[in-house]
Image 1: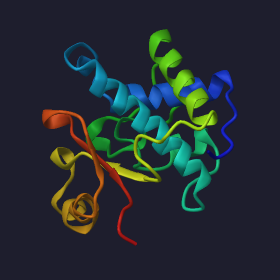
Image 2: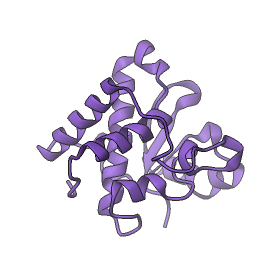
Image 3: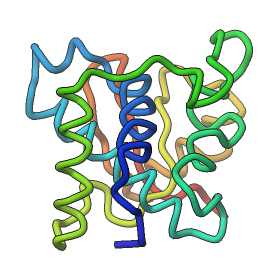
Image 4: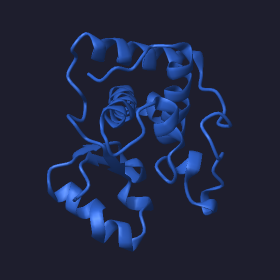
Length: 158
């Protein structure tokens, strides 16, 4: 696992990202899948901090342009603009995130292996679908979620 220092700010910011990416309704209808999706977003952020292709801090990863739709995504989604401006997640979610980071530090397996990318094909435009979402899913990306809230976690081509 890359060095991610377990500070309250790191937990807070990862939790804010998770809160925008994982549908809270899934917690009630399919708690196991909700947990897997939370883990996958945490794992993605941790993987990105270790990659030369992304910033090496959680704040940098969270605020990178157009990476997390409701944080710095397209204006049509009315993004918050930064992780700092995103509403705080619940204490329960923050506890889940802290637990996940602690588990990873103790050697737990990643939910998504070394994946750096993920996308919901239901909300991707035709260009993104053709250029990287479909090739990523065909290359063995991990599929998580249900219905319209499916995400594929993998490595984008190139």
